[in-house]
Image (cartoon, rainbow, N blue to C red; front, side):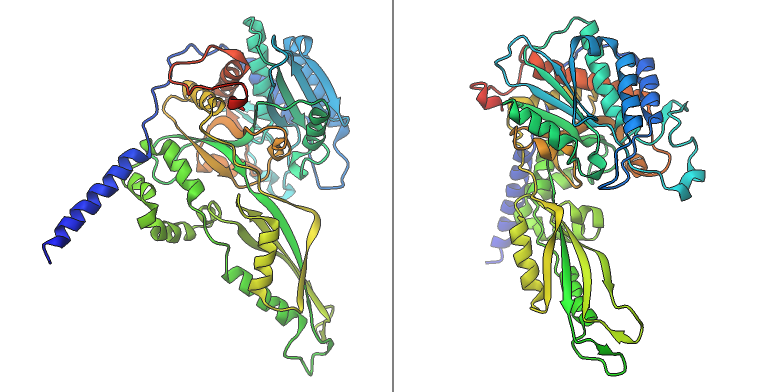
Length: 500
């Protein structure tokens, strides 16, 4: 019988290797194309001007920075004259902008490119840490500095520069191209992107594809990859904040009850934190399947054979908060309150728990699990109004539109692998998911872990090289989606509907 063990091990190794070789196909070499010429000086000056418009969203219910938004609109008009002469520009809900570039074939569904005009506030206590003033838009050390340089006035300016350069070259799209710039994404987008989506819906417009911010070309961020990886967001997490209220016997602290409100609440919160939602490896496996041909061989073996290595992968992912969040609905204890005096037992204690929903998990399902895990009828909970939405649908990656997006990215970033991924935060893209089955989230710039810390942080900036590549990538996507001859190697689309 012992002779069977080496044979079994040999068979197992061969089986693992075959699955590995079939798991991720090497990408086709990027097409050698001449990238469109863009005006880097106009890009840098335009972004600097945009940053100097302090379009800060301070909080839900706060009025928008009306004067700064109108100032930005005027500067865009002056900086991109061809785009404003040839495209129709509309104001939606006063401050958001919708541009329409009519295509030759108006019966074709349009494509939509989005960004947002607003930025988050700057922490006053961190002002001295900025190497350049946060709203200076300074050009220094080969970069444009200031709040919004990465998130995400750079995409707004690069999109308009792409249009400007294509118009200057005489390009006319076959299908209509839309640009949508909301004004309140940083506080939820309810008055900006949501209203734009409603406007498009009222007009019966259903984009064949949508491209918003989200992923990027990352270097040294994704485990197992030495080179750059272009992460295209094909979905984003949902959002749910629950307010927990625990009831207990009020009275004097000299004779405490065994079931105090604070004690009940503490036990409930401990149970929730100790019992996280289950992990789902399918999304991360799709990322490695798409880009894994350029990953290390060991990583390919692991993700091609999750049936064997799934437990190991889960343990490794759970060891890091960022990777743990990438594969499950997260549970975050964010607020707690109870009691009014040190010698009084309160009748109630309250807390807020925030969940970021993994696609496939639902609000109803999470609430049922919370009820089960807490197991105490004296602890009630309810969703906070306007603080919940389901996870987005997952856009398919076996379509012509996704192939064209990936091809355009690799024309500009030829060393990058391309793969789908799940966006952890919320973007304006979720408002367009009801209009289009192909919603992608990607900002075409190259960033590393240190760069990512600048988003909403100190010394936010973007290099001129990244700005140029952004505009070139957007122009290539516009030409591909807007109507260019199909490239060799692209998957066949049986009909217009098949590409949507």
